[in-house]
Picture 1 (tube, rainbow, N blue to C red):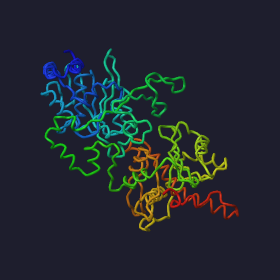
Picture 2: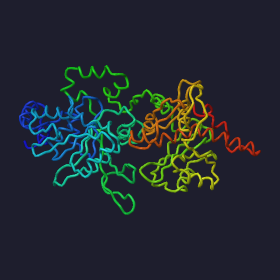
Picture 3: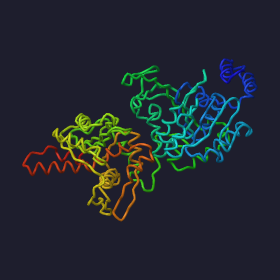
Picture 4: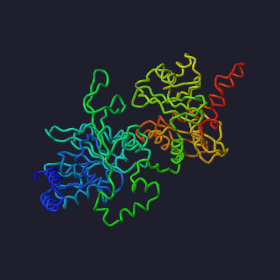
Amino acid sequence: MSSLEDVLALLTATPEKERETAIAAALKATADFAWIPNPGPQTAAYFSEADELLYGGQAGGGKSDLLLGLGLTAHERALILRRVKTDVEKVGGLGPRLVTILGSSEGYNAQQHIFKGFGREIELNGCEQEKDKERFKGRPHDLKGFDELADFLESQYLFIIGWNRTTTPGQRVRVVSSTNPPTTPEGQWIVRRWAAWLDPNHPNPAKDGELRWFITKGDEDIEVEGPGEYDVGRRLKVRAKSRTFIRSTLQDNPDLAKDGSYQANLDAMPEELRRAYSDGDFSVGLQDDDFQVFPIGWIEAAMQRWTSQRPPGVAMTATATDVAQGGKDFTVTASRYGGWYAPLDVVPGTDTKEGYQVTARVTRIRRDRCPAIIDVGGGYGADAVVSMTENGIAVFPYNGVLPSTAKSVDKQFAFKNKRAESHWRFREALNPEQEGGSVIALPPDPLLKADLAAVHFKNTRLGIQIEEKAAIKDRIGRSPDRGDAVIMCLGDGELAVAKIMRRARNNGQGPQVNLGHSKLKQGYR
């Protein structure tokens, strides 16, 4: 037998009566193999043809072993990463596990975290800070492996896999990642990237192991019909790459499942962690931080209230736009009818470099002559405000650093600035314990959920202070633009409607907007 494929082909073709004899022969034939996958999902993952594979779900499903096994048996040069490098050599980490698989430390340099043997090289490393990704620039590996991908930022992942390649003819090239379901905002990008397999609301769900094909156009990840080259503009074509997800369970790993103690430990976890690690539930709620502005339970409840049909008889109350002019950020516009939010309009910042381009996006969405809120913090939205004013749109600039004289609904807290006030108003509107309950209904968007859950606050002598946007961006690896747009659309949308009504009354004119439509209690229920 020359390969694992030969052994499995023999077993598959063997009649059931002769299977035991064939298994004995297979065990003998694979005695010299450094590693062989367990039957089931691990074997399916080993032989998956996907360029980009996500393998995981329950804790204990043999995820790390798959990465190490691929490096030992199927790849010439492998890089396997943990987020924190010191985790590589901790008890149960990649280094000790590699030695256990091999049966000795021969060929493994524990100081450099590099194994060389069987004509192969495996490097174990870490990428703790966002900037650490630069250390892997230009370093080709035919296997890029990520152990516990939910711990990594999307920006780290996308940067590092850019050098997934080889010069050896016939050598397979792929990216394989293992993970448990994410339980922090930083890891929610995984649900979006593998939405066809993980998002229960995806319009075209995929089966485990099914190949789907994707390209990147600008900064947008786009699913395409199948393999081949696709036009991405400027006479450029890119090759579509395949992607899949294969779910693993503890029962697929006989080494851990046999005595039941590992499962018992998982079952003893708090409910949300048990759903993530024991059940492998990728829709599980995130863990709340002690100073998290928006409890994840409130966010999830608002998304569960949402339906694809907006409330009948309710005019559009407001739009709000977080503007990006170029760069890697996105311009996001939120719009709502009372408490019901429409799906967000998201375009690359490179498409909104000029104010008139932002105006065009908002005009396409805006209904019922409702006010348009534009974030002018940092000066990015100023051109859009001028453009909208020239086009007769009721536009209201938002600047989060301006002072606030408002108080919280319970009169307990002041606010350091306008940014703190608008975030707290959204928190108050989300609160399910208010009289009549919350009427906020948010579209089920994983990145919106992550944006809102990522925001922290502290109470200072000047009042409630919200974590700076730059700090959130550093922590989650991208701008929380979806969350910012949704937040501005609420409190500042209400204030804008009230201003329009006052102007109309003072001018002796009929109202441009029915104020009753803007009251949340008369909106979505």
